[in-house]
Image (cartoon, rainbow, N blue to C red; front, side, top):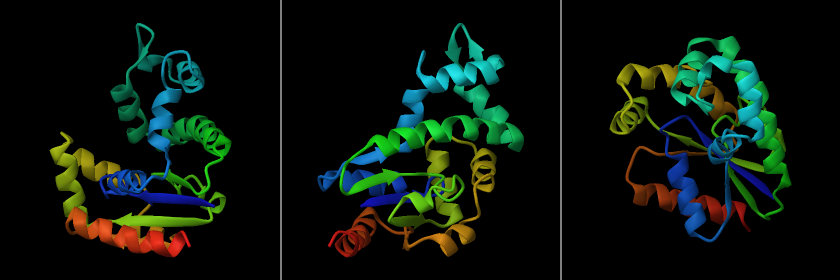
Length: 186
């Protein structure tokens, strides 16, 4: 069984996945795999070096520069996603865990929802998300821009199997996750 956990930036999907991991389940982290693929010499690094050569300084990928470019230009973001998404999906498909949990930030945007048997969407109010991102050092406008570059949460809600609203405490979030796990892992 393959189960995706998704949500917008700052929604709490990583907290949910850390909690699932604490319960003894392995969780495939798409962002972590993306970072590994972008390490010097790896597939993603080599592909991006060809397509975005200006983002490399002394053989190192300048991730902030790449982010600024792709968030400012939807066509360049699509190119980046066309390069990285298949590489991440390949690594995901190599995993044989059962159940297989995966933290997939762009589940619906990438069209990966059909790959999973179940998905869980974490939804959080925008003001809470912006506050969380500001605490991580992101400016308010940058946080709003990143949220606006993702599929609207209303569309994600329409497509999700299960939704957990994460506007309260971690204890409340974990209680909802426990109920969901009892439903999905039976």
